[in-house]
Amino acid sequence: MSALTVALPHRRATTRLAGRLARVLAPGDLLVLEGPLGSGKTFLTRALCRALGLDRALPVTSPTFTLLHELETVPPVAHADLYRLADAAAVRLLGLDAQRDEGRILVVEWGGPHVALLGGDGLVVELAVEPRRQAQIHATGARSAQLLAELAAA
Image (cartoon, rainbow, N blue to C red; front, side):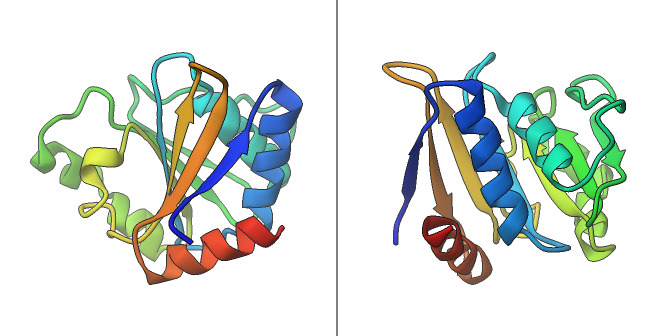
């Protein structure tokens, strides 16, 4: 399977996609979120964290300025935003590879240009708003290809 397209006409559909992702992702997996501003990257991350058991009272916000948030889900999530980082050296300094090695699911907004630095094998979710809200999901390696097949079957 080369890609999976999921229609996201409303927030409930995005929440359902997050639930499907929560069922297939495991410690050390990579999820890269791409799409224009306002396309739902942080909303999808929040819904994923809720599906992984994060208390509803705890906020899930974009780490645009802090660059990285660690969230106590099961398994734990490291949520990064690379929007302001164009330089590979700056991305390396964040130690995101160590987050994966420590068993966190790594969720990276704006991580597309840095997939190789992030471990090279992950699901890339490209969120679109026009002409309709949808997610196109593709795999970048063997592990993520397995995840994509599981996600398609879920």
